[in-house]
Length: 215
Image (tube, rainbow, N blue to C red; front, side, top):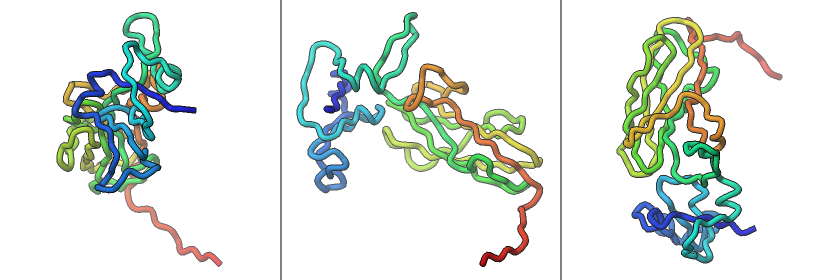
């Protein structure tokens, strides 16, 4: 089955959109979309069409299967729900470490870190909540800001009391969009950008094990 998607003319002609025939000064490989693929900065991957054979300019909105029946979301802002093709990515941050169920040591500093990204706007802020009653606190953005790239971040936390903690993070982009706290029923898969909590346990001391012998 042929895969076809469309872009609004404004986005297709923007500096953030290009047609790529090479990568890292080498011809584009088949797996990466040879002979030609779209690169659409800030948009979800299904807009980055691979193996392009032809481009058509149309006067009416394109309603092909992969545009109107798959890779879509529900839009309810105008009253009656309607299907809208997935396009620009939404602001999101996620914790990479610690992982769900990790055991941390009370009184020892721990580096909470992860990645954040958005669509057309850059990441301006990542906030972290450790569930210890101190609310949202500022994380530190790492590396140099680059358009349409992930932004790594970190937050140093020293848990003082033993117990279970729910770690959360949220991103805010340059357009003022804030990552939502609660799940949105009409947004799944690609558009699921709500906060994903990570539960950890703080223990008084490192866990030790008796010697074990495996034959």
